[in-house]
Length: 157
Image (cartoon, rainbow, N blue to C red; front, side, top):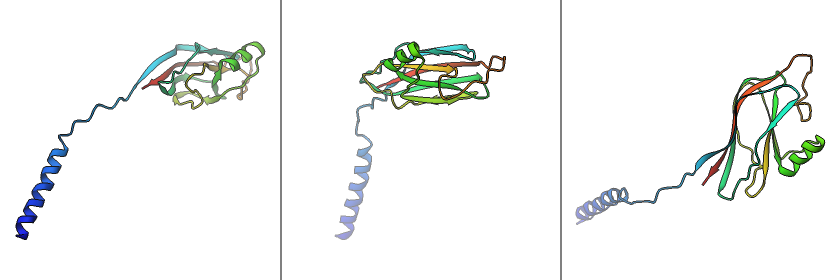
């Protein structure tokens, strides 16, 4: 009798393992990265900056990334700033730098994940090779430019 119960329990275990593989689950929505702005083969001279279009992360945007591939950079580096539209307007009008996030980059490849771009806001990405931010240029009569490709992506779920 005990042998019969053990066989029956063994059969039930095997059947439950086999049947558990047959459960159909709905596909998980992994979202997608959507390109929002880019700079291609861009050369940014010393004492200059460039900026993105206005960026509006919607409520379906759960992450932002900025990919920068820099082939040439000054030895002191250059900066990537994330500004609200108000901060950007103040910067353009009075050169006052206030940011929600910033990064200092050198030659190489970078993937930046700014955490301060929240859904519902309006932002600008500024790439800076001036003395306005945290990094000072070394104006020595030679143009310490940077050459890069950069892209801004929103992850839409």
